[in-house]
Image 1 (cartoon, rainbow, N blue to C red):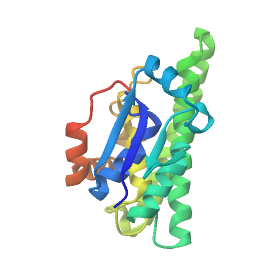
Image 2 (image 1 turned 180 degrees about the horizontal axis):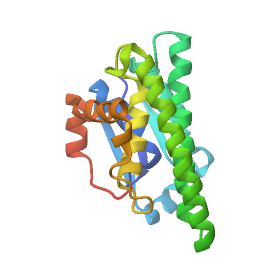
Image 3 (image 1 turned 60 degrees about the horizontal axis):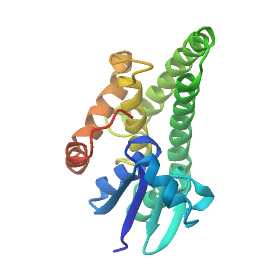
Length: 210
């Protein structure tokens, strides 16, 4: 079995979906977390693609771009979907979660209070529309009491869970009751967290704000 090293900062961030895939698969990995100062030294070595994180080193081969890493691992360990159609649906959820994350980042870095308030209002509307669509996607998949794609957990569910960790507890967008209006998604979120391998990872991973 290849040896994986997930390399990122001390945060869940863009590395967490890949950590969740490896955890769900029961695959041990090195969880490398740099401080900002350490990263500046590491980046100067030139071995990290594009000078950015996250990266993953697998048997000496360096991979970059968070979603590319997550998809690679999902394909390796059976979480990418069984058919091309299922894979496309998994990608739809991944890209949808990326849209939500980008919206949060934009609000976080906005300095103008009035603009921040405007962006937050727009974001809240987008979240509501997105969750309604995902609730339907889940319900359309055999009634919605399983997973978003196919008949087992996939990168779609893990990406959704990772994003909801932000939306449910974000210091900039505190929405602890966000999923109350989406019972199928709320149950899915709990179902993913209760998977034995995922529960074990959630228990042992470093506690971080992001």
